[in-house]
Each structure stands twice: as structure tokens, then as C-alpha cells.
Image 1 (spheres, one colour):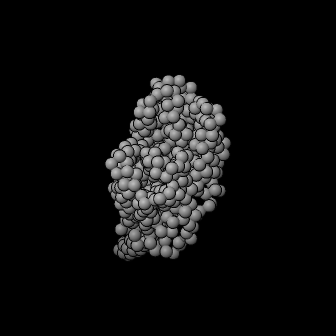
Image 2 (cartoon, rainbow, N blue to C red):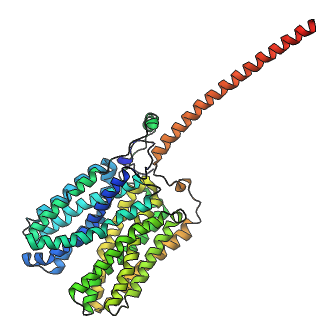
Image 3 (tube, rainbow, N blue to C red):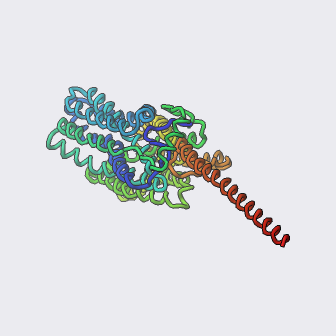
Amino acid sequence: MGGAVVDDGPPGVKAPDGGWGWAVLAGGFVITGFSYAFPKAVSVFFKELIREFDVGYSDTAWISSILLAMLYGTGPLCSVLVNRFGCRPVMMVGGLFASLGMILASFATSIIHIYLCTGVITGLGLALNFQPSLIMLNRYFSERRPLANGLAAAGSPVALCCLSPLGQILQYKYGWRGGFLILGGILLNCCACGALMRPLLPPKKLEESAVVAAEEKKPKKKLLDFSVFKDRGFLIYTLAASIMVLGLFVPPVFVVSYAKGLGYEDTKSALLLTILGFVDMFARPASGLIAGLKWVRPRTVYLFSFAMLFNGITDLVGSQAKDYNGLVVFCIFFGMSYGMVGALQFEVLMTIVGTEKFSSAIGLVLLMEAFAVLLGPPGAGRLLDTTHQYMHVFLLAGCEVTLSAIVIVLGNFLCLSRRKEHPEAKMEMAVTATEEEGLNCVVEGEEDEEGEEEPRGKEMGANSAQKAGDERIVMENNTSDQ
């Protein structure tokens, strides 16, 4: 079986779908916002860094690229640490790393120092927070998990709308060094979010018997479970997600430049990203709410493929925009489809691999996506340098995302729908294999007690019947004597 996460808690613990889970959700909302929005928010300091270190824009752009590469590429490392030490300590240490990187970067004397401090150290810290927050969200929610994933994913557009203006204010008042220092202090909130990720507690009735059962038959833990690659559903998902990421992040990177290329001013062009983020902010929780419906949830993978297809077609149609109004319409529909993909991508992965293997699966998926993240936007930029037309960039992105939707639909239909459904796939509650054994032991114990009581009752009934028969025989003999 897969590697057991330390925070799985004692056997017999079920996902509460509420209670302290809402605090875990709040922490996941903040962590998701920092993880996805921070690489984009630091771009407001690029002009100051260019003046300070006398470098080009492409040199400063590597800061965001390294941040994203660390966020995705360190997935397996995060899985190993979580499976070894648990989610809470990993997240709190990650918060310290994220803060330390920005603080050290405020004393940088070259762009290389920024790469190492902001890119590597802060990127590693954010990665150590992002993945464990998703694992704990999966532990605390089962029936309401799609909604919880949608609400947590909404942290990305909300944080982007807050961090970008904040970065501009800090740069204006304190310069880039003071801004980095203050942002480092803000990132210490990751430690507070990590403190919210407390392990689940067992019910009192099941505590003793379940713990004994777990000790008697304790599975060997794996720091990184590669057996997920034997699951055809996981392979199809990983392939489709990697293709999708090639084009998914391209339009938000180039849409502002697209508007500028059409002759619109900087302020008006930048408003397009605000429109996109505002729509995305509401699309994510709405998608999670829809995915949680009883008749939709068993078909979440098809809803996810529809979201990818919707996003790809939006790119293809948006490539034909000739004026500002056309780009506004594109950003509205792109924000809707982008929000749907963001809310559903990890929910589908949780459904495919289950709770027990999710900690390893997400790390391996993020590693695969890291290569696509590094290839996607630069490849689109090279295409733009060659053709000098944004239409071709958006067409390429649309084709890649549409292809990913086709891959996951055909893969699910041809490879998975004919396979006999495994009994564990029908379970929607977050119970690990160890917990199931604990629960089974408790049930068996109760059945044994009932089984012992039943023969006793039969013996007592037999004795009573025998006594009654003896009494009748004695009475008949007395009557015959008379």
C-alpha cells in the first residue's frame, strides 16, 4: 500500500467535513494565495531591480521562473518530508524559509543573490506549505471536499489582487529593499497557517481497540510511493495535466502585451488582468459547489475535461480579437474556464488515487508539471519573436489545452470505463487502509460478543424447554396413577 502520512492520525478517524476543518480551509486559502500569487506579485519590483543591478528584463524574469520551478519541481521532496515528519512541522519550517529568503534578498548586492534568496529559498518555503495544505484539506473534508477545494483555490486570485497593489505601495514608500523586508515579515503568516494543521483525534469508543489493531498489523511506511504509476487513471491524469500546463499559463502572461500591441495605453491594458482575476475569484468556489452535487461528483473527471476544453476553445476564439472589447470578452470567459480548472484539478487527483496515496501522487504530478511550466511561456515567447503576432501564441496555447481535454476524456473512456470498478473506489470518505483495519477490528469484536451471547441464550432456552418437558411428564404420570 501507499506511504501513510503522519497526520493521518490514529485509526478510526473519519473526515469531519466541518468543525476544525474550516480553520484548516482558511489556512489553505492563505497558503494557496501566497504560493500562486507571490511569483507574479514580485514582478512589480522588476524595474527597480533593473536599475539597481543594471540587468535586462529577461534577467529579472528568471526570479518568477525560479519561484515557480521550486514550487512545482520540489514536489517529491515535499512528499518525502510530509510522509516522514507530518504536515504541521513541514509547513512551519517552510514558513520560516519563505520569510528568510525575502529578508536575505533585501540585503542582496547582485541579481544572483536575488535568484538564490527569493527564487530558491522562498520558493522552497512556499512549496513546503502548498503541498501539505492540500493533503490536510483532503484529510478534513470528504463529502464537502469539492467545495473546500474550490474555496481554497480562490485564494490565488484574491491574493493577487491584494499583493500586487501592496507591492507597488511598498516600493513607492520604502524602495525595493524595504518592500522585500516587509513581504518577508508577511510570509511569516505561513507559520501561523501551518499551526492550524493539527492532526485529527480519534473517537473515544474506538481509540483503545483501534490503536491495538494498528500496532498488531502496522503497514510499512513509504516515504515516496511510486506504485501510483501502476494506476492507469493516474498516468492518464499526469499526461493530460502536463500537456495542459504547457498552454494554461500563457494567455495571462501575454494578454496585457497583446492589448499594448493593439495600441492601447498601459493602464487600460493592465485592467484586463483585473477583470480576469475578478471573474476567476468567483468561478473557483462556484465550480467547487457544482462539483459537490450528488449527480455531478461521480463524473467530476468529465467536468474537469469540459473545463479544459472550455479554456482551450476560449484561447482559440480569443486569438481572433481585434480590439479592446474583444479582449475584455476573452478575459471574462478565460477567467471562468481558468477558475474551473483551478478548482477541479486537485479534486480529480484526490478522487483518482485516494487519501492514502495522495501525498505521494501530488508530489510526482507537480514534478511532471514543472517541466511544462518551464517550457510553456518561454516557448510561446520564442514563437512570438519569430512571428511577431500574438494570434499564433494564443492559437498554440488553445491547441495544447484542447489536446489535454481530449487525452483525459479518451483515456477515461477507453482505458478506465471498461475496467471493473474497484470496491475502494466507491468509498467517498477519507479513511486510510490502516483506519479501515481498525474499524473492521472493532466491528468484528462486537460481532464476537454478540456471537457469544447468542449461544448462551440458546442454551438457556434449551434448558428451560427441557425443564418444562420434565414437568409435563411428571404431571402426566400423576394423572395416570390417579
